[in-house]
Every structure is written in C-alpha cells, then in structure tokens.
Image (cartoon, rainbow, N blue to C red; front, side, top):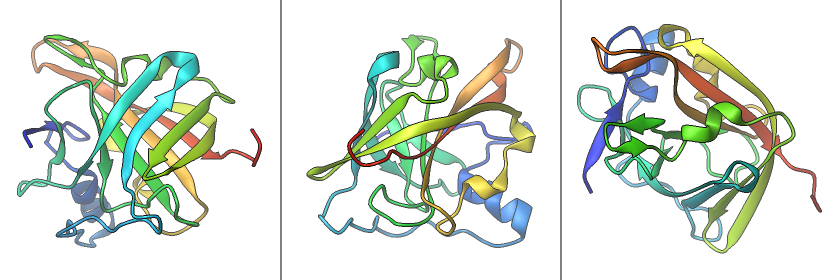
Length: 188
C-alpha cells in the first residue's frame, strides 16, 4: 500500500505517535499488526451522510521519521492503529484524512462544514458504530491537543484534517480541523 504523510505540527512532519511522544516524553511504537475488534473487524468505512462524506478507511501507523502514514489516495482515510477501535469502551478512535491535494478534493474536504449533532457512522467488520458530533475546533498544527491520542478515558471519535489558511510557499495548511464525537445513544 502506498502511503503519504500528514503535516500535524511545528512545520515538521509529525505523526500522531510522534506528537504524543514529543508532548509527553513517552515513546509511541506502532503495533506490528492492528488489533482485531471482538467481531474481527477493523474500521473500513466512515460516513457523514449529511455532509456527503463517505470514504474507505485503511489502518495506518507511523513512518520511521514519525510521520502519520496516510493513504496516498486522498479519497481514503487513515485509522491510527495506536488508538482505540470503534468497539472499544474507552479511548479515542482517530481517523485522519486529506482535505485536498493538487488533484482535487480529499475525503475530508467537507469536514470544516460539520456541526454539532451531525451523525458519523464507522463500519468495522459486520458492525456499524454511530457517533454524534459534539464539537468542531481548529488548532494551529503545533497546538493540536495531545489528549486526542489515547486509549483511555471515555469513548470518542476524532476526525482530523488540514484547514485554515493555505501557505502556497510551503504547500501546507496552517491549521488542523478536529471534529469530536461521542457514541450516539442507541436507536439514533
């Protein structure tokens, strides 16, 4: 699988794992193989029907330099294997995707338009887990909260893409857009 990287902070190619390591002085090591969910499924599809977002999901880790290895195809999203699975009862499921590239819109192009209350569905194996968006925030890349990247705490979902002003001299966006969501009540 070809991969590309996502610029997450400080003008340096950082991975989620490298960011956590840098902020907490705790090394984060990519698992050799992603853990399987109880039903044997890993995240394979993310859907925000109200925003016309539907994208296949690939497991990603970090590259040797610490970069988050996103799928090369901007229409696909990466699930960080160091985080939680949708079926986990605690921790954050982290999905990151491109907003765009020189060929056009990426999977998370419309993420900046998501609003509190929007429904997000993650398919993993034979199960679909629904989340309700609780908030959308924009952070400078160097200020992306480290507490997004955890396998402890209440279950939640973090969708991350680039946003804010585009710097044509570097070819990168200044900020990250982060959508947070919590499991939707049963029956919604």
